Length: 330
Ligand code: NDP
Image (tube, rainbow, N blue to C red; front, side, top):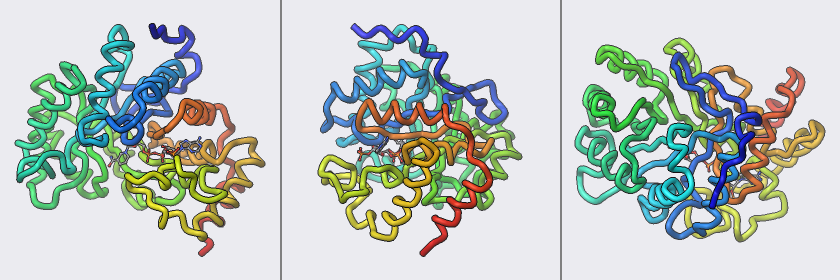
């Protein structure tokens, strides 16, 4: 029987999510990889236990996390039921819809029909009455923004989500979405963009909109799916994300140019007494707009590494310049 660590709230830093009442852990755990029906249930369970023991209160899912689609929500639902049901009110559980989920014209993108049906399916898979945050997963160029935001508002009013958010929206569309939600009497709690040393698009306008509109920010793939770690310094291990047959990080993404930068960043991390994965987390959290770093993990020790990053000193100006120099090299 799992009994959570009694001192779990002494370890973690909690940051306010934009202008809201919600505090999120500075490190949150995503279930995109390693929690599917094809993965070891006991490993998934051990990672969730360790995360909760370290004060990670936020777990991020989506309708199609697996493989197969839906199975990460089922795995999480099982763990919740057996081990964490007494702690539901200590958890922030999110899910999303917006990418492909089921066949036909109603299982993808941003229609009201898709979002509402998808959340009902997610709740059934997780055995929940409500999620804490429901996201539209990506912008849909063909559905009016009013329809998608209206669906999020309906979901809030139905009580099936306590807060809503958006993911991967560019800065202008983010502001428009927030305006529509405001007119409907609500607020966009949070934006979930990709952000890492290898992917800095949010610095070009989005962070400013989030600050001005009081929207929180949870940065996904802060380790660039594992590239910004020591995982690939000596080739591609067969049990790594790039080494496994499924997933979006493919061997061709592990280029000699990237690894040359990773080596130099790894040296800097060592000088700071950190692992590179930890430096990458310290780096995304340096903006006050970034509420949480949304990591993935394939083992308990990776979850531990991430939380340990929070004890490190902030990055000095000369260190930030050195990082910019390393990243700028072609
Ligand atoms: P990361 O960039 O944190 O990559 C995680 C991977 O990095 C792990 O699975 C592991 O890979 C490797 N890793 C982690 N820690 C270490 C360590 N200490 N040392 C060495 N390697 C390490 O994030 P993800 O890409 O997994 O994304 C995180 C979450 O973000 C997802 O679960 C999901 O919730 C969310 N997300 C949202 C998206 C959206 O569109 N909104 C899109 C993508 C993700 P390995 O398997 O090789 O060990």
